[in-house]
Length: 272
Ligand SMILES: C[S@@+](CC[C@H](N)C(=O)[O-])C[C@H]1O[C@@H](n2cnc3c(N)ncnc32)[C@H](O)[C@@H]1O
Image 1: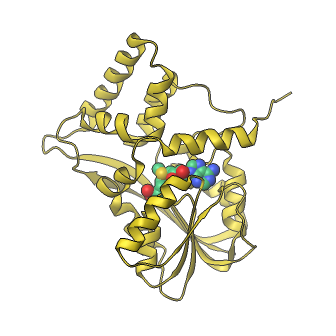
Image 2: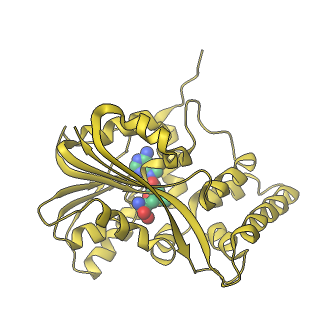
């Protein structure tokens, strides 16, 4: 018999993990370009009502609101929404910030002209549930736009490197980077969508001067990395092993001009 995870407990853990460190600085200092790219690929305009799922501090919600669209930024982690709210006020942008689980969205069927998620929905552990919710809230002929790290790309590899050091995932969970696998996403969305366009891109990251720079930045600011280091904190040999494994990954990807390329999948589709 499969033992199902205690969901409230699991969600509380995930929420606490994403509140660790300083995720908003990861979004603004390293991957800001992705939010803009997603809004542009999904062709968001002032006529749209848009849901950003797992919006974090608004990496995609803010550029979506800048088009004049009516935007709801939703996320599991209130601390990140709060950071987004402050940034929106500083930029004089108006949008709604709402706590919501991607696997149980508190919105009506067909409520949105478009739903987007920038390296966000991929972190909800039960992919089918999240995909069902994503499709449900978009109106017929409405748009879906997704960005996910690919399993073969840099962040996909980083998760694979961290996995042996991390506590086991909950029963029934699928690893986040599978949302960056074209066949998996097509299967998740199924025949409920058409006009599916899929492309791979490289985010050029120039934020780290050395191969280890990304590791030290993520150790300090990125919840999933902090959580793994916390789990092995009592074992200095394991910590040193993970330090070296992440440094080795950095050495393979860091270029002489001090840039890195982080691969992601961009998917757009229309609700049938
Ligand atoms: C890598 S961040 C991406 C945030 C933002 N979209 C961006 O581009 O910066 C992943 C986000 O997923 C959120 N998240 C994780 N699990 C979630 C769930 N089940 N429902 C909603 N949000 C979730 C986290 O709180 C976090 O904000």
